[in-house]
Length: 443
Image (cartoon, rainbow, N blue to C red):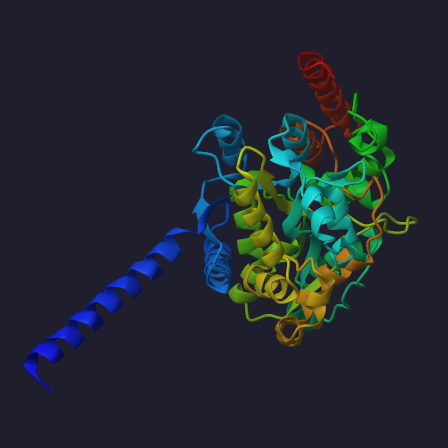
C-alpha cells in the first residue's frame, strides 16, 4: 500500500475519532441537570452520591448533582430565599417539621401531580410515612430518610446480670422493672434508663396514647388554632420518668447534641442499660459495641394499647420554579430512590428505614436481619402502625418553637418542678405563638 493511501486512511480514522468524541461530549452535555439539595452527612451522604451516579448511568436524559447544603433549619431558609432564582435546586430534602411551612408557601409542585400522571403505585409505600407528608388526600412530598423512636437495651448486659429482656411491645412498667433490676444487680454501677430532654420523644408518648397534639385533627382538616401539651398522656409519661428518677434508675444527660452524644457513649461503654432514641442510630450502636443489641417498640402507658408513633426524618420536594423537563427529571430520580432494592440498600447503609414494602423481600435486608436481628424491629413497628391523625405527624407552623418550649418543660420536670404546671406553661407559650403567627399570615 502506498504511503499516501496510508496517510489518507489514518486521517480518516482521526477525523472519525474526533467526530465520535464530539458526539459523546454533545450527548453528555445535552443531559438536563437536576440539582439536588440535601442535608446528609457520613454514610448517608456517601450512599446518596452512589445513587446519583447509578441513576445518571442508567439513562441518557438527566444528570443528578447532589449538593450538601448544611443543617435542616438552614436549608429551609435557603429554599425560601433562592426560590424563583437560578440558584434554587430542582429537588430538595426538607425535614418533617417544615412540611406545613413549605406547603403554605407553595414552593413545590405536589408529587401527587406526578403520581397521578404516571399511575405510580403509592400503596407499596409504608402508610404512616406516606400520610405524614400528605394533606386532604394530596401527597405533598415523598417520604425518604425515615426513622421512628425505639427503645434500645443492652441484651448482653441483661444476660450477664440475669435479667429477663423486656417484651417487644413494652409498657412503662415493663421498662421500669428492667431498669430497677439493672440498678440493683449492678449494685448501682450501671444506670437503668435515660429519656433525653427532647420534645420529639414527648410528642411520641402522646401519639402512642392516641392523643392529638394540635386541634383540627392535628392540623389535617384546617390550620391549627391551639395545641394541648398538658394532657393525660403527657402527664403519665412524665410521671413515669419522675418515678424512675426517684427510684435512682434514671440518668439525665440533659438536652441537645452533647446530651445525645453522652447518652450514646454511656450506653456503648456499658454504663447505661436502656435509652430511647431514633431508629436511625442502630448502625452507630452496632458498630460501636460487641455486646448484643436489643430493640423494642416505643413503650406505651400501662392500660393503653400502643397506637403507634409518628416518623421523623425528611422528605423530597420538587421545586415548582423549574421548567417542566427539570421537574420531570427530579421526579424520575425520586422514583429511582424509592425502588425496593435502593430502599433496602439505604436502610443497610444508613439505618433509616426502607419505605418500599417490597424491600423486605430483598436479599439485602434478609442478610442484614440475619446479621443484626434487632435491625428488623423498627421496620416491624413501622409496618404495624395503622395511620391516624394522632400518629401521622403534626401539621403546624412553628414546631421548632414548640420544641424549645416543650424541652424547657421537660428540663423543669426532670429537675423536680410540678408536671402539670410545667406542661401548661409550654402550652400557653405555644398558643400565644400560634395566635400571633396565624394573625400575621391571615389564617
